[in-house]
Image 1 (cartoon, rainbow, N blue to C red):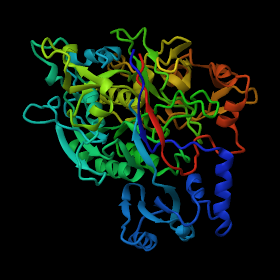
Image 2 (cartoon, one colour):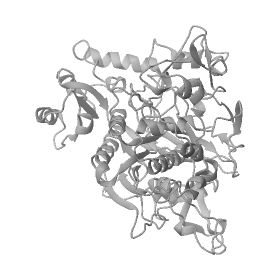
Image 3 (cartoon, helix red, strand yellow):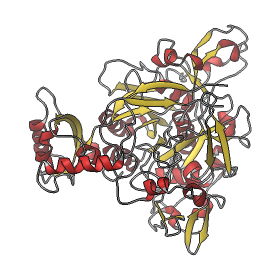
Image 4 (tube, helix red, strand yellow):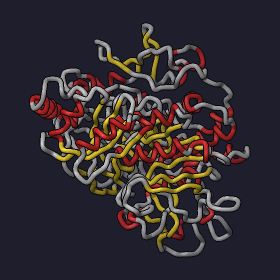
Length: 579
């Protein structure tokens, strides 16, 4: 049995909602009434006199605004500008926040949060999603550029092209001067577009190949040597990718990282950046997060979707366990996979699930931090080679998490776009969700091999989304969602009987009838039509526990949502690997 692996980093700081509300009130009393209206709740909770990193969004960013930001920035620091979202990032003293709040040009101010990778093949992840069908049809991602927003991608041999490397662009937006020190981004890139060069030939019994093995890769390094970054570093990478879209035909963006939700996606700068990329014509695929086991607030892992996966535009991906077999019929949800609805906005997430557990993929090098941090995830040479003995591979590694599931869907998007370059991001998302495999058990239980704790998952809309991505079905389907509507993930609400239902919106593809009806896309085993409302089946199981604690946390309106947390010190992020 494979044990859990852990790494300590600044990640999820859980605080009682009431304490946070009190802190926010206290901050507001330090200035004029209403001064916190433009502040994110967690920034409002920061006491005055503290040094903070913030992102300031403007109605329209001007040189005057940049100069004003410089005037409140700490001496010796300079604001970073993000025209993509009309914003600047700066370091300042919290006592000067009131001057920004009073500026009529300022729309919203958020903390510049830290973000983290969300990883914790099998040899079967490609079969589980029917990728070989695409390869047999001559589809391999050729000509499609995919932006990897991560810890960097090392050219370790599995990214070769016809004449040169398929890593066509590489830049560091983390400002530490080191390239791919961690190794997470290289593993992600291999799942998406590795060609298996390092495991191909007469001496190899297994070849580790990515979903779109000839796609071009663009590496935007936004995480540091232990897989940690900030909102502003991620936004810088996203902004650069958008600016290079035409140059490299960037059609897909993979974001296998995230952080807790602190405020509505409508003002969260990280979410606004991915929306801008989406509206620029790039399919953005984001990890759901690895907090599906979190019961800190009595929610049984619900309402734990990470940002920017909480944004309704992007494709948010949860993780399945391939169970060591080529068939998907026995695959189960990974208990760590984060579940919806999203905090604050109650958006139905994830959108899709894909294989993400015990995935063998490319290793940057044995000097990459991830290699020594997780020695139990090293791949012995005799696992895939007739020679080499039990020595660890220098080119492949095992990781688990929604980080690994995300590039499977990114690769599927690249294949669809190679087949039909005219598809819009919304049409790609709608097609993948419509054609997803929707046959699941009602529930499954996983037992942690270390702690002995069991975790039960129900296969509802908030756990598996519209289903298990199916590349063959998506490529075989010819139905197109109208270009006049979006494929935003729907909002959900709860009625007096505690039934959760989907909110109808005629400007979204799911708001129409026929092919794109909610009950069709998500499947009748997940939702049903009851009294003209699409009701999420199984919601009475989820919310009908003896205690109403979880229900009140997710659906209550008298206090901030459970993931709206105050700024705090170091905590622990856990990488789960289970079989």
